[in-house]
Image (tube, rainbow over all chains, first blue to last red; front, side, top):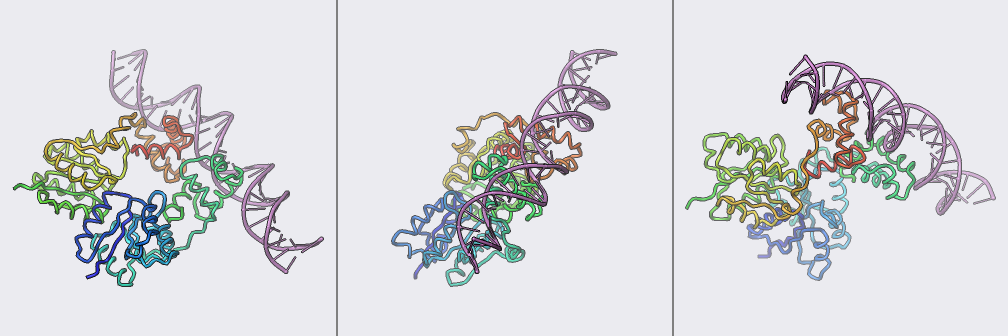
Length: 205
Length: 205
DNA sequence: GTTAACTCATGACAATTGTCATCTTAGATT
DNA sequence: AATCTAAGATGACAATTGTCATGAGTTAAC
């Protein structure tokens, strides 16, 4: 019998180990590779035997290369591996970007481990598996922010002043304030911090 | 042979399930109870057979009752159960509070699952197990914030304005600004947001 | 019963941030 | 060449935030 070959990318080693163990307990699954960050996974998939991987199970928020970037690469390289995202965050922006990157499964770490096993089987068989929590309120408006607004918000979130932000983005302080102001108005926030929070919660940063 | 009885409290169901499974694979461990939040664990431990629990394995950041509050309760009630914290964050403030609550083990989710198994054995035998990453830079200064400063920072972190904060804390806006100002100065931050970020990173919020 | 310490408030002023209309410049478009 | 457009800059003003000195009331200590 041909087992389903799985690559796992997850930066929490404890979860990585535990998942690998429980997946190996299923007698038609085989974990061929464990990676603690997206870059390792990318390197592995670029190597010759990448075609042996059926399922890539990946977290989103990881150092160096995120799970979304990893999924995009698999999609662009036309690899046969199918990607399943496993993440903490029910952010519609993440889901949207995942769908655009050809992701076949999107599960939350809040879901029971049985769901993961079912999802792997289903996706391997050619189906899709999206956590029901996400389907509900998912198709909200898409990210209204421009690239510059996003970049400025990202820095403002950490408490950088207008001037520090302007230095990093090579813009004048006035322009930075304009961008932050328009971002806040687009998001119905009353200051840059609330705007950054909203954008972050929606997966736009 | 008497098995080591374990209660797990962890709000990520996926990790909870996976951990329970791999711990059950050890033939001298038995998972007697799984909880997805601290409150359930607390309720269970207040019941009659709580003495049957040898090890409480708990996350920190959980809804309703945090792992630190849970540990404190076990400590105060003089239960025989020994607490092991399993958390994402290497924040010295957390470790300090954990030690004060009589916690015997403190591991990071970045550690391999083998470390967890070793830690459970060690703690059950009367020892302690602290993640080495934490021992290094752990004994930095302790939380310099007052209760009010902390409360104000917590709200400021989400982008609430001075006035909104003053409403929630039943203080005058001026007083709120004073508290935020002194908090920022204690933390060498140049505004409330940077101060909130620093405090959060240290586990003081 | 005075003193000290603590919490909260106030007022004044500086600095930063938010808002908006207007301008410049460099590409595109026609 | 004349026009349009988008990115960025500027200036003016309001609103909010940061800083600090000072004061009022309460409680605990001596």
